[in-house]
Length: 113
Length: 114
Image 1 (cartoon, each protein chain N blue to C red):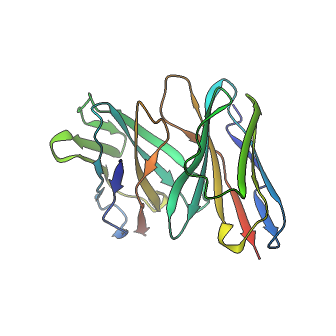
Image 2: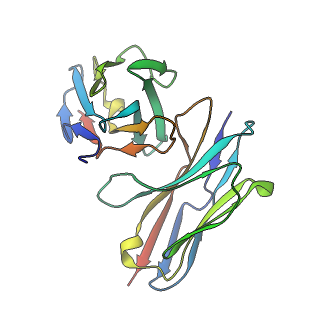
């Protein structure tokens, strides 16, 4: 099992640019989560999907952030336009049906300069 | 609202010492799940254990053990005979049946010195 796969692992971009983070969940898992980790706020949920449908997006900071899950094997998190305060590590995680432990990807370290 | 508190920001021990990481949680739900995750210096989040609110049995896995006490809303984690490889940030987390997402504590950084 390859685990949750995120790309890119590192992204450096200039303020104002569009950034797209990608995630491939573990095959057969039907819930997918996007978390953000910063020194100030720790690990916080941005959004989660169940069976490709967004269930809770209350953690999405503002309209500059959007997430999609077009199919069971792929999700994107987009930031447009990016700002320096978006610099963080973004984690994707997936969970099999009926279980609650989430399995995390390696994370994408985003730096907005 | 759910809340997880890890009051210990950083702990430093010498190899072979035992160490306990504290976790206190708040939730209004009667059914909930508690977790511990490990984040080594490489940055990934590694799942260690899940406990549900109906199972207060303590669990031991090798050098790791967990003590769940509903009466004090605590879910503490003990590493016996710590090793340098145990150096990491450890997160306690909580979820409930209504909201499957995890609420994390702020983490405890454990440094094990040789």
